[in-house]
Length: 502
Image (cartoon, rainbow, N blue to C red; front, side, top):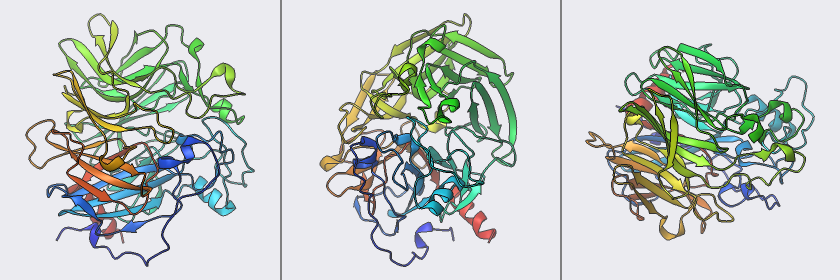
């Protein structure tokens, strides 16, 4: 009989968890961003509608959830919250739920102290006194979560990933791909649709290191480092059959400034002589080429990249600025002032001439673009994202969108009954899917009336305001960044591996 995480005996009933109540006007500590102070779990969750019978597995997400009041609540930034993993387990129309902190060594230091010790790395702040032997920098483990090597791996751009038990969500320790990486790796990874191998990179100052991890052994089987000249805030990348795609922009991450408790995420247009550039690394030969786009802006996240008719086509979102201006480090912009809405764009590189061009593909402001991941590196027709049209005082996102690149049409739906602030959508293919959009979109939404979160299941091919199912969660999942789906066969195998380990 297959393992079923929903049959695990719950822990004894604990007092109902609550949100933190810190007096602050900082948007990133209020509303859907507000911290949730306790771990939760629940079984047989209430469902409005019907969870599709073929939707079996788990949605894993990691939230940005500060465990202790930040040392400077005015300068606290959403990127700095501690990682708390949420697992929503679906099977046979039922749903179960569990959340647990990612217990990093730096979190243990703050738990022992009973307060925040580390200062912010985005807008600066005032550091506390670090105990002897404590990590010099904080690993917040809050970017992404996904199954690999029979572990739930949680990522952070500034440190090593952490491995968790995929059923209990217990933290097992840092994860280094069996000795294959040493300092850090990106929170974003891609899965090669042909081999299942993991494709990812590390950005340490101006040096980018490309990695490929074997899906069977989890060992690094390919790597290559190259210098881009400036310490770009390199958060996401794209891959095609031939290329790994990186953008060089004025958005930078400056560790030297973080060490002085100054803003580490800075906007420095003067650092780029030619403006924005696309850097391509041939995945097979490691040859690196540069392609000028010009201008001063930043990419946020990518949908995909693919080669067609002699061109490399890259789809993603573009933002006009990102970070505190380098000449305003002692009086930085507010935490959300430097993060204006982004717009979907398409970039093209003529592979014969090297000429790069761009065009806007939709006038709908949005973020967190996603595709059906089976089309990674291949031509895709559909892209999904959350809209950021309203810039509400208490939210960032306000709707769910689907863009059809063939028809040049964007469909937007808002949440039912006032639900808002949807998370990044995750595409899950139907069983025996026959088309690219034959599947479901899973996203978490904030219910203002209850101050709790709900999982909404939408039909990806027929996006409507009323979803197929609304799963009521027993807590609020603070608004976070990324997550992934694990099908029941992959999930069951991973859980069985941990059971056999004792």
